[in-house]
Length: 218
Image 1 (cartoon, rainbow, N blue to C red):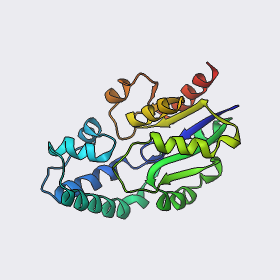
Image 2: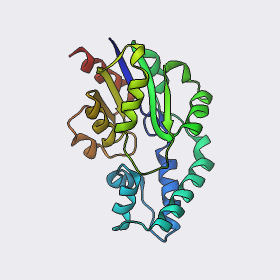
Image 3: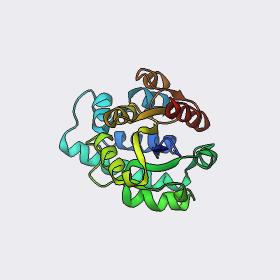
């Protein structure tokens, strides 16, 4: 079985953290909550997103508040998204990996695919999967199960697979399927949060790929 990387998109290959925080602050403003800085966001962020809102609000949002915040977030994010680019070093990291690669994101599939194409990196992936269900209600584990099942025929084995993402939930999802994980510190979680999981934490995507190479050799 060849070595394989499953890449996360938002906050990992796609450098959108500042836009995500701006859109989140727009959502908070809809129910009169104070804005967060990028660092405050990283320190409080959780998956699923509803847990993050509970952390910020100090309580569970009502169904009406959730609908309002979710709609406000997506409206602002989509208005600003096209100003974002690939994370520095992403193109080189993708081109430099000698095994196979795929992309699994909790961003909606219908929006993800054209964005990946527009940024010119679709050719690197044997499969691209985004989220089909409603936002904010689940983590990545079950999505990763289905993603790996879909590419099993391509010679992908979980024990030779590394998920590279930017949040703790990515490492939990990898553990759920028996894969490895490397976490990138440039996305949604503070480095201190990522370090608690016990997997390698990289400050650049080149470093993340280096860790991935070491993991599949062992």
